[in-house]
Image (cartoon, rainbow, N blue to C red; front, side, top):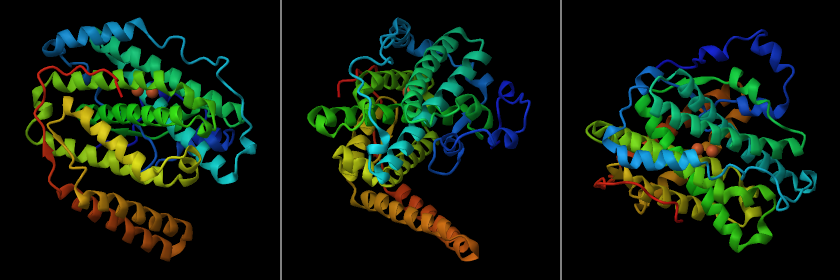
Length: 369
Ligand SMILES: [Fe+2]
Ligand SMILES: [Fe+2]
């Protein structure tokens, strides 16, 4: 695997990253951090992706592209009278910190999609693929911009141009991009809609106006997920044989990462009136149900050992953070120990049998949740 490759047009820099780092704010720096848990930027084999043949899923593809072309959310990402200004300094310290972290990590993953999709559109020659990736990067750019406006209100906007140049890029083979991006789009949908539905019932807990925008927003993510589902369904091999093991790996990795990350934001979820365990399990169930459209298996979310595994992963992460904070030789040794413990825990979770799923003949779903 070829890590940390930057697309060529992004690397023509006049100053070194270090020189430019001096001029960026803390929020941009925090968006730059790459760890196991922070959203990544990806690059891939664009030539191979350009060869996708959508003929086997033609009927469903045309319907989806027509819908994306009609651009139902064209006017949605603009502020209107529903936007009420809030003073971030009026929020308690822990909530302010965690909410900012939530915005920055959401922005980073929206923008990561924007950069990857735009690059595919720029490099491709396959018209259908270029058209799709053009629509998706249009949407992600709006999403990232809308979140950044919320950060700018607080005087802590992210310098996105800088981020695109300075962030490390992880290389994933196209098929891994399909699995990972399919899941992140669908889990993004499930997260946004679950928060939106909850706040519909409890408007008093909506401490920031951005949550009001989540309903139409999540429909964009839903369609992006549909597109990746069709790409996966266009090539049967992606749903068979050894690829089943990869699908299981991505399901588990994406769920475990979300579980650990959400538990790092207790004040944020408390302010929303959301029980993190309950919220995460709802999101996993919904994502898992949706993923039956193109994945030949689903995780057994009712298996007690799997639930225990998520909880254990969270405890291990806390120990790892403590080791990090301690620093020095003792800190480094402790960190290696807990990293090994996380790997062992992941393998144990992976060994829990999954449930097999028969892929349906047609797949188009509507966002009815
Ligand atoms: Fe998005
Ligand atoms: Fe998306």
